[in-house]
Image (cartoon, rainbow, N blue to C red; front, side):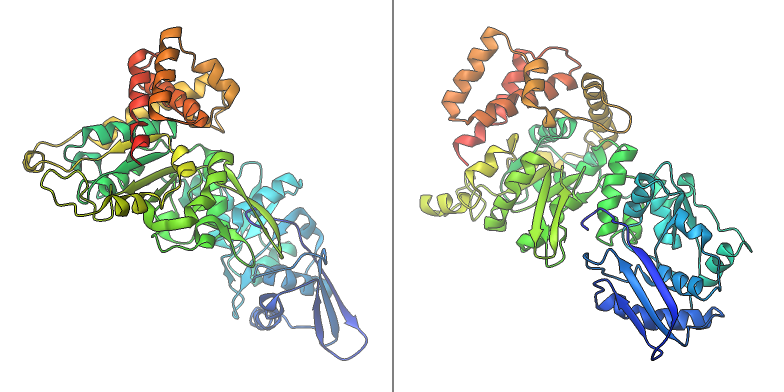
Length: 501
């Protein structure tokens, strides 16, 4: 349900008196009912046979709807155990799931990580899964992960005739680092030093970022290079990411089989359900798929009213979806990166006078993004049109590797500050009010300066805390224990667009 796994016990009773039919009970959906056809063919092609008597298969507990083909394998094993074809003693030690082909081979399923976490929390010895699903489950510590390629091999395992291969974390393809020599690099970005600096500060502290500028100023180009300066996730963070992707059925593509943070860039035609999650049987949306990573929204005003669905999740780091089928809570701690034009045509402020928008058109365009949402974006930066001299410059700009080194150093300072373990990491953007008071202290002159800026820009109380958080991150990049006046000035400057947006 959502990204969590709940245990389902398969009970099979064969040899009953009556017409030789098979009944599945326990709120099965159409895919579960169809499993009987797959199971019977798989058993026959694996050297076994379906019982020729009345048989009842119960999926307990009976008040939760069962969906998908993951019950094929345990149902077939339950049938074999009920007829004495296998010894079922070992079954209670494992959580078993898998889809069967008609030949008896095992196919991958969604939720391998969730099943392994369930096995660990319920005190099971381990899990038995298809090969691809076992590769992701192997990253969960404290759980033995076994895999079988077909039903026959698993039956022989239960009968003590063979051993199943054990999958280790070091052998998992999800453990490999992302390597792409053609990956976008910040050295390709010409000019835009102010935007590059704002991006570095945003990534170092996990702050939300908005870039405003005319078409062709490099907003999208810079955003697509943010993954190249992101620090690697911790194992626990990656398991959270992998668990969400696994439940959504996205772990089978080769591009997702690597140890890195997600970068999601949905098109502005996306629906509310696609962005926030949900549906008749609730599934993760883009904000959850961006968990522990980046959500990039290009052409921000074009998304319209669905943006307001993100306001509460951005504050809480989770979203609760309630439907008739049930209620689920999904994690969604992401760094929002957004880009927009200054007006509908995009050329407001162009010295060549290209903009033809009226004040009313400009106001209507900007009002598509609500004030409460903008208030939750820590850093606003203007991406000015590039001069020809910058475009003609052949010298390479600073590379992503150099920027990433400073970002990682700042994250290490934050890790020590918040005394987090190696399994988790806390960043400046997620500081609580008490932590802000402890780690973002200002002297009297700095407090007066910030108060004057708040009055001048007409900022909300929320902006006060966000300016302090950004100031703390800028100080961390300078390896300064205290927030200095220049750090505060820079953080205030990142809110200057509040006067015009």
